[in-house]
Amino acid sequence: MFGGRPLFVLFGSSIVQYSFSNGGWGAALADIYARKADVLLRGYIGWNTRRAVQVMDKVFPKDSAVQPSLVIVYFGGNDSIDAHCSGLGPHVPLDEYIGNMRKIAEHLKSLSEKTRVLFLSCPPLNEEMLRNSTSSTILSEIVRTNETCRLYSDACVALCKEMHLKVVDLWHAMQKREDWKTACFTDGLHLSEEGSNIVVEEILKVLKEAEWEPSLHWKAMPTEFAEDSPFDLVSSSGDATVNPSEWTIHRKIQWS
Image (cartoon, rainbow, N blue to C red; front, top):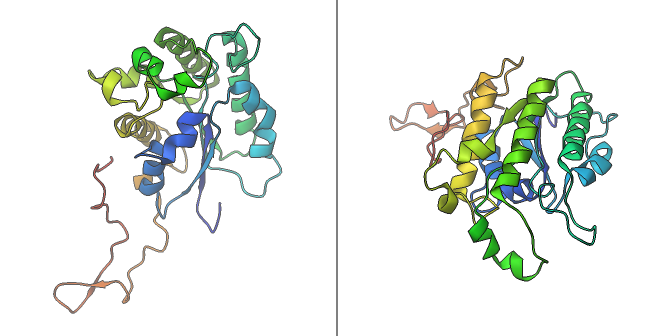
């Protein structure tokens, strides 16, 4: 808690690192939780769960005076890439991926009694769009399929069920939209604004339904310095002020 606000940390690979760009889901959460919680980005493009396990003590030290109220975790897309013949690259076998995600969850749960954990499973991908993306011209062939994404997504969801963790099943959630292949991605893999909106909607749904005390849903959290003030904007009548602390009229989407 910095200055009295709860701390939300987004931890993961490029889906997280890019989440503040181009109408991303991280930026949307930061706006939704403005004056309610501080949203901190810890995203690392290209990373797999092996690298996450290596640094989780540094990113989330157990002896920190301030521990997060919520950690949203995404890993799996890079782990699911087929193994390269050189032995190099981000591929992590499915069994090891599950074990690494378990280690991450156990570490985060040990930070404090009030630290809540939410996993995001591997989203689908548009294989044709990915093959035609600019990244394919500077990297060796990346064998990445929607089917392997499903396998890693299902494994994440099953692990969360076993460990009683909250999870957003992105692989299924995104494909509920008929035009998901063209609408949800910038390059077949990374999320467009439309794809990010699905992530935000699913996260908020989980936070609203979670029986956590205190609740971490934005509507249930207090707004910082929300008391009325004579220094607020003057009303049209000219004899009073209007408190704009809870206004959301600037948002294109009125989130529930």
